Length: 325
Image (tube, rainbow, N blue to C red; front, top):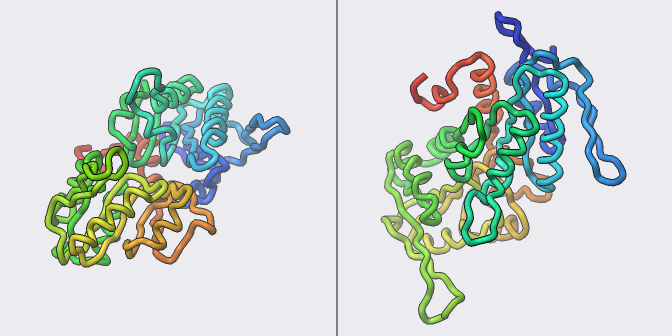
């Protein structure tokens, strides 16, 4: 069947964008539903067309799309899907964006710059979305950009369970690769019960305006260091952090991140780095040419499915992470 119903006859329907259908089908399997058959294609001039092959009137719609390259294409497709659902009288529309697009443009650093993360939220709202769901937003403030409920999910339990299955926390130090990730790293130390270290970047006075020196603040000598971040994009920050840790006598380095963007030189950098293992989730598709021996990919589908079910049944999403119901 395509969806299932609650006692008040609301019908859950799951819709898959074209960017990462494997993830949507994995979520569908967890929910024991089938994604709604959808016709989607591009015209010769690049415009996108979407049509759903079943009635969606009165349904509780969950529209999944992973915003990998080309980001703008998949964002536009998801907006069109939401618009189609609104015009077809869906009762409620939830945008499921495991990796929120434009999340790093969440504030103005200088004059005449956009706040693109807010623009994306406005676009979803205008298209007809009632609710947003995402995993490990780059900054928590993005939740306030959308005028409606936002379900902010965390991959930390999934990643930390894997680390605990491989390593003894007694010999582990969690490392924030820069000052902006300290709060994320603190959540890891709370979970694992291990110490925290921070990579502090400063300019080398002997080389004006060019080189940054990474200083390690915290005990890492003889310990396995887990560098934690929300995403790995080009890999530059994490690879340099690993070099600094090894120079300070770390026994080994593992990188753990929710989103494997892996753009540009990332794969070559990570393959040739001091990092022994790179652990990510499948919020974004990883093409075969970007896979390498050190890479471990964990499935986020059970978490997304549990959150979708909680929203559909008017349950507690926070409760999935041990919070109050």
